[in-house]
Image (tube, rainbow, N blue to C red; front, side, top):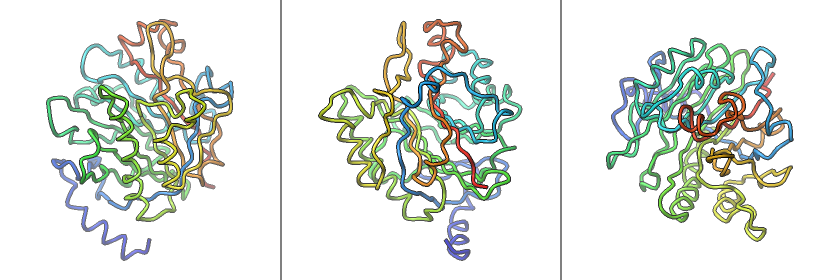
Length: 327
């Protein structure tokens, strides 16, 4: 994208530095000067959480042990409602350079969590979605400013009202690298029927098409709680139809499953239950993925008790990728 076109995008969005009040507006970190609506996307490939065996139960590396960027997604289970051990939540987030967080219920809870994360800052939507009914959620990105500098964050336009919770975008520049990393986090509706989940997954096609109209030079990650496995175990629909159509339409690669079925990420009463949380990366980024997996929060943080984790931490485990930045 040339400088003149970029300036045009910036000028049309810079007025949104004040708190966001519209569903389709930008949400801006108070420390940022502008909100750039330039959305960039390369082709994507899904990183299965059923990757090498070491990723299944391994404890996340300490940040100091690696120069790679550690990116995660986590549904934290209604942050701000009910009881929550913020110290445990913060300890888990602290192991990553950026974490896309779903099911944020109150701004006060984010501020309280942020107090436990002195090395991180947060981008938080001022608008909670959906803009109908009484149930509302925020999205948030907790990021480490020593590793990443935010340059943009915004909702995906949703003129057809296809999403109950509009996907939320955040773009960052890696410190000490020309790498620009863009994330799109989603929380697909659960609903009473699988069909409503499939409908929103199919609507991601339009969301990605909108993003692809701009600069394709950035490395892209699409991540979140999709409330749907990519493979539900039926050999005749592997991956499921809604995923295959999304992957084909947006020139995405087929899911990479190296070790059987996907690793479950939701917490049941006595074990991990459903493979709902996923991470997709741009094809150009795929060769730089050093590791991918699920954080086993039950054994790592809850003494092996699924009930304790569900009650005080979350009913989802984080999923993550490690990425080697551009030199």
